[in-house]
Length: 318
Ligand SMILES: O=C(O)CCC(=O)C(=O)O
Ligand SMILES: [Fe+2]
Image (cartoon, rainbow, N blue to C red):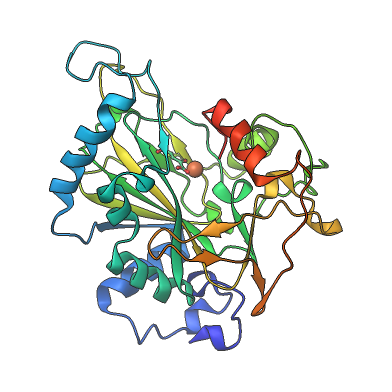
């Protein structure tokens, strides 16, 4: 396995991936590993025989919290609240999807370290977000030990504003504050994504990139690599819903932080104090097996105040 030489790189993104025999993987897992390596995303059916029942229970439990007139087929569904973050804290099915043992085992093999889910997002409609990389919200040191797992909770037609991705963009540089000449630490920017939007757009233009929509079937899942550009296509029929759950995963033995509010070169990191969703255990920030001292935070910089700010922001705050 290539991680003997590069333990600090996810196995699927190893610079010597071609030499990795993947011998510990089934054929289905090897196909996923190759798709992730080549394209930055991979499709699979969600590995849970109870998934349909879970999806229906989640819609019943979360539905009333969005203030969207789901029962009226002709009503605009895009007016209400568009997402619930961390519903796993009160919804057992959201938690079970995030904690799915087959997904955890698969991610562990693909990345070469144990995976843990740390955040869930439940959307009743499309996000219509511009192409972005999640690595400005959450990243790791060493980098790229992060991924998203997106689950279609209904069939998604083109008019519903499907998830899209830019195949191969995971290989492009991870855009940092240093690259765009911006200081992030202590910044009061209201959006973690806006400062990078022009750079992402320009890279897409120069590379002639295509935004491929994922016209998913209910129960289909897409895994995306840490730096894959993705977003939500324009919704052309506002009466449609587009139920989905996104679970974000990190991997053991890393520093977990928010690059949008960090300046890595001078050691100013907005680190995250995480608890794994599936086992309830804290995942302290670690570097090469050693825990980092917990940073003393002023009130302004505390994770708590950041979370509060983001809650009031809604859309892009994480
Ligand atoms: O579902 C979408 O439209 C995109 C969601 C997304 O970008 C995310 O959760 O990271
Ligand atoms: Fe995203």
